[in-house]
Amino acid sequence: MDNTSLPQGYRHPLLQGIVERLAHANICLHITKKSVKNINFRLKPYHLAVSVPIYISNAELAQAVERRISWALIHHPQVLKRHQRISKEIDTQDSFLLWGEPQSNTFNQHEKLAYYRWQLSIVMSELFAKWQPIVGAYANETRIKKMQTRWGSCNTRARRIWLSVHLPAYPIECTEYVIVHELCHLHHANHSPAFWQTVATAMPDYCHWHHMLAGKSGKLD
Image 1 (cartoon, rainbow, N blue to C red):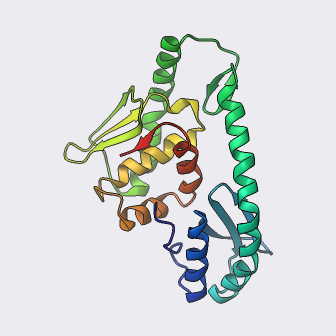
Image 2: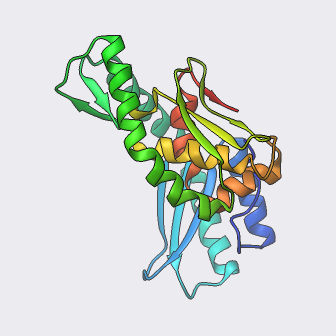
Image 3: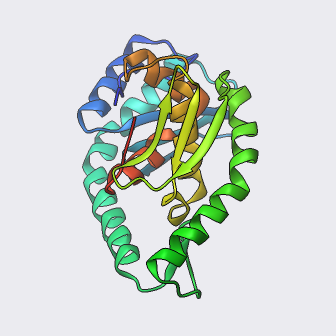
């Protein structure tokens, strides 16, 4: 993954250095301007989210973020450890997971996959309709497939996108990220820096969902 590109609209030499320092710890920097009075920081797995007042300058922003870099680098391992512990607890639970939440249903493996396929088929059309205009790319065909080693795949010639039937076990944002990821391949058929910049532009917080899935058994084409 490319973590070294600045968020769109924020060009400042000090910010570039900050992004590169964070990238060494595999942390993405996500900056958003909001109607807030103060600069707020939120450290999540592989992700430092910063919300800033609309009126702030890039120089002021860079200085404020620089003062919190040491804090982020020191505490990120603790955030990761806590996240991994929670993920492990969820994975070992006997309860059935739907969109990341435990359910009371009990299914055998065949019934669970059939249920996941049904749940994914319900939301797919709506999610593709949501994200295709944002990405600026449109699939000719979307399908669900039982994939053991991939969360999604894209045939760029046919403009056909496959989603893994296992995705409904995780928060729905993970499915949205996979859709964005595969749609971006219709712009870039590789994982170049330009590809990752396209992903980040469409879905600025993609890092969080990427790493949630990356810690599992699947990967993305």
